[in-house]
Image (cartoon, rainbow, N blue to C red; front, side, top):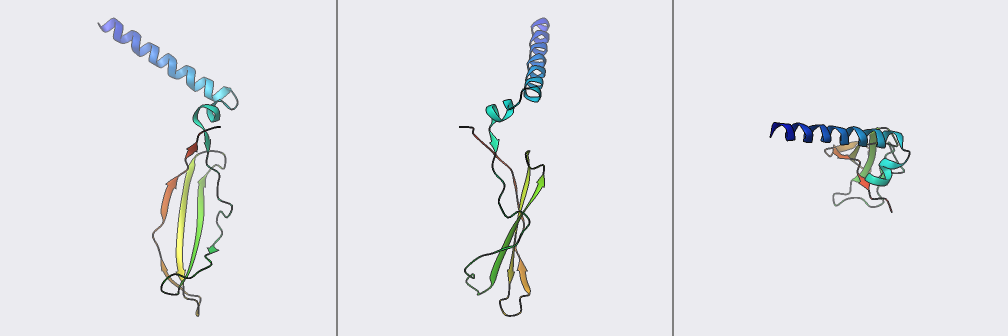
Length: 107
C-alpha cells in the first residue's frame, strides 16, 4: 500500500514540474490555457468627475489605482471622494474597494 502511495506522489510531483516548465517556456501557453487578464481602465490614477451630482448636490469623483505589473496579476483599488460644488472642499471619502484582477477566457 505504501509503495502505491509513493508512486502517486512521485507522479503528481512530475506532473506539477512538467506544467510549471511548460507554462514558463512555451510562449502564450498560459494565456491560451488560463485566459487573459481583463484590460486595465483607461484612466489609471486620474480623478474622474461624474457628470451628474449625487442626491445631496455633491460632486462625486473617482479614480482607480493599479498595484502590480501591467501584463500580470495585481490589485485594482477604487477610490471615491465627494466635493462641495461651491467651496471645492472634500466633504467625505468613501471606503476604498480593492479587487483582484481577473482572467477572462480566451476566444
